[in-house]
Amino acid sequence: MRRAMLVAAALVLAGAAQAVEKAAFTPAETAAAERIRPEAIRAHTRALADDLLEGRGTASRGERLAQLYIVAQMERLGLQPAAPAGGWLQPLEVVGITSRSPETIRLRAGSGEGIDLRAREDFVAFSGVAEPEARVAGTEVVFAGYGIVAPEYGWDDYKGTDVKGKVVLLMNNDPEDDPQLFAGKTRLYYGRWDYKYETAARQGAAGAILIHTTPSAGYPWTVVQSSWSGEQFTLPHEGGPQLQVAAWATEEASRRIATLGGQDLDALRAAAQKRGFTAVPLGVTLDAALVNEVRRKSTANVLGRLPGSDPALSREAVIYTAHYDHLGMKDDAKPGEDAIFNGARDNASGVAAMLEVAQAMASLSPAPRRSVYFVAAAAEEQGLLGSQYLTAHPPMPLGRVALNVNIDEMNVWGRTRDLIMIGLGKSSVDDWVQAIAEMQGRHVVPDASPDKGFFYRSDQFPLAKAGVPAAYFEAGTEILGQPAGFGEQKKKEYDDRDYHQPSDELRPDWDLSGAAEDTRFFFYLGLQAANAPAMPVWRPGDEFEAARKKSLADAASLP
Ligand SMILES: [Zn+2]
Image (cartoon, rainbow, N blue to C red; front, side, top):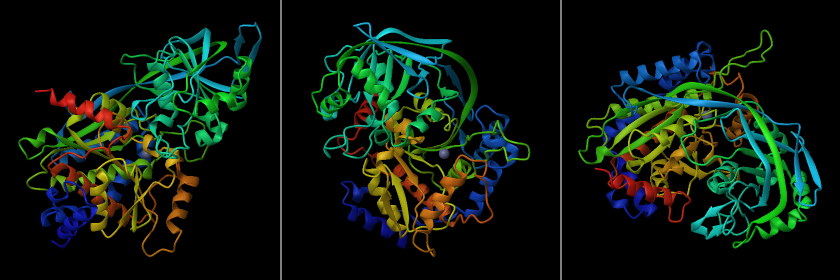
């Protein structure tokens, strides 16, 4: 009861418009939350991160074992199979493309002058198409600033310029200087490389070259070189425009391209800082041909559902997501070396937490008013592919999804005073988040590096991009009973030593009391969204508000 009263008080303090209508948690709901136990999180993690599952690589035998384990747990809890075509598994195909680029690519000016750029040193290029070859030949290059089209900011770098069949040369990130534009220093989706390529394709461009600088990328050129070498994964193309060639070039190489066209790169970039900038054709053409090896693999998302108890609201839903895939086995392990990427924290622990949320949720009688979906997502490590597919083929219209709570990497270092919310400030979900944290005697803090764009790098992102309000958290760092800096140090140790390494294993010294508390938090948050009279909304002007309006309208037009 005490908890319930605290929630009500906190909601009033948060000053939300609907505060008085929001339900407080009942003793039965609190009791359900208390069923979430650290021992159970450990047990699920133990099973999913075992060597027998061989790192849960996409399309591997270990992945099928993980699916089996998750399905068995969901079935045991009394969830219903919820894949759109029936059953527990939503099959999907992923396409792996290995591009071989020529040692040099050539750019020519009208004068007949030309320059050669060297693969890896000056540029990296990969294919936008899953075909044996991708090519641009004699294709004109246009400098198109940031390559951003954002009606809500009155910004359009492509305005008045036809880039159909051309190659665009683009700056990374988004304009930073004006806090009123593109959230100031925070990197929005407009500032990410994937947005740049996607938008260039939508404009009909045949190719796009991103200008690399360390500040605008957030990482050095060596990271570009290593990330874009080897096999790249994507979903099969389902229609719509595609780039032939997507590339990055160093700042120096980009400068040479501009100079070849008689332009100064710094002057071009300065002009592109201003609204009203017009793209500049460089009078330069590019020839590049990539030879591709294309492989197709089959995987699946796992979907379970707890049907809602309210006759009207049960058509709507809350979706929990946690990716269950990891990196599989190390190809180049030396004899005797640990070759299994167990992914215990990333993300066996998150699936474990989601199963505990499901356990608590399924114990409620009556069930929450809206339906609750639990999705163990596939192929996250290959580029959020399972969640992308889920978003394109959802079990219900996305305009009827109240909230997505994504769980990735649990806290394994003990209870915390804080919880980090990635994307705090984007939607009305904040009010619930603050109130529930307060009820737990904790506080919510924003992401310390909003320029890194973490919101766009995890499974809630595809859903958010399609308009679904989303919540994604990171473990807090203020650990109870530990000296200041302990939590930060543990996180850093994990990032330096274990992240995406075979050493990400279940350890006897893990303290999952904080994971259990965070899992209860995820339970309360989903429950709040499942029972609230109205669905949460993006803050006015948020980058995803327009997509939400469209999906709400689409859902409203359905029977
Ligand atoms: Zn992960």
